[in-house]
Length: 156
Image 1 (cartoon, helix red, strand yellow):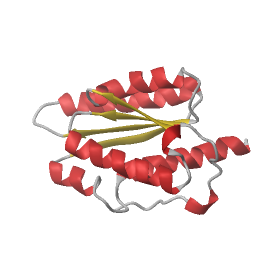
Image 2: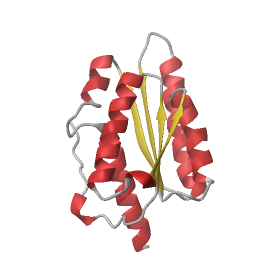
Image 3: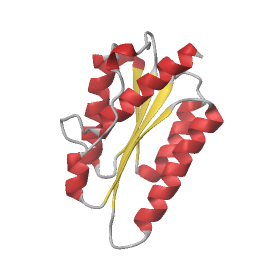
């Protein structure tokens, strides 16, 4: 599925502090995303004590919680994790659109990498495929994106 994987050997992330904000809605999926993100961070030398976790009710609450975490000045990056599965009403479109906009706005306004780990799928099977214990886990991809951005910002 994914075409892009960062060069995992090139990260300069020593001493980095990272916040993970994870939605509880669709918790069976978001917990798998969280596990993927944590595995990737630890694999690249981020100490568990340098990873803070904040849980929010659903995807729509991710941007505000990311903003709150960003404004502490404590973190080198934030990872936002959530899952919205299409239903039979336009609710999916509104939640996905506003959550995506909000996460991007936080990154730009706070001048901080906020990695986008929001699954927006048509059905549960797609969500399970993208959150499994494999290289398609979007939580892991979000963590790798955060690490790459930390490295990039340290070069600037």
